[in-house]
Image 1: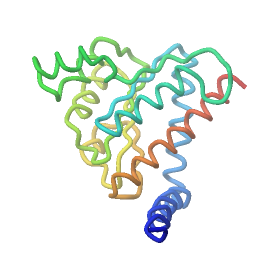
Image 2 (image 1 turned 30 degrees about the vertical axis):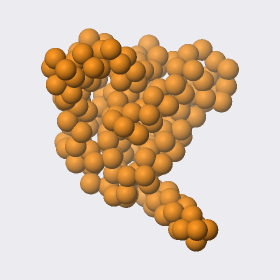
Image 3 (image 1 turned 60 degrees about the vertical axis):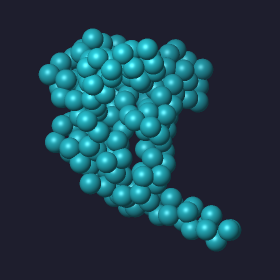
Image 4 (image 1 turned 90 degrees about the vertical axis):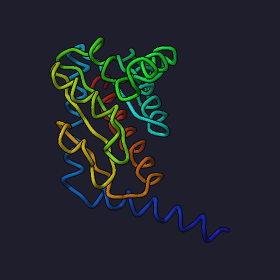
Length: 191
């Protein structure tokens, strides 16, 4: 059992080492950090969306901005779009699950806001539709995916493709990268 545990941890570490060894990906993370800092400094909002474990990660990262990360500071407007279950179930029932995020972006998003979509495959229809809607309204769209990127390759302004096809390893890296962005944005704004 210990060797299986060690193997899983090694695969997780290897995926993160692949990110460290990819200067283009590191530059993308740095650019997204700067863009997110500018968004908040301009009074903008950052929205997150995902499905399943990625929805949990989206909610986690939104809470890091709207609550706090390391420092006691003013809240930053950040929201995970799936947290209103009455809305989610009504829209999924009446308009189809693929429309649950795009309708909220249509209602809440304004030019200069950011939408971050987490999808390990990059093909989640509800995230793709949200990105399509967001782009018509002037939001910046940031995709967080696995290695292939899927459809989000074509509808993201910036994309973080974790160099893996293994869903748990991708999600572990999404939360790590999200924490890096949260930490650096907080330092940029409140230091």
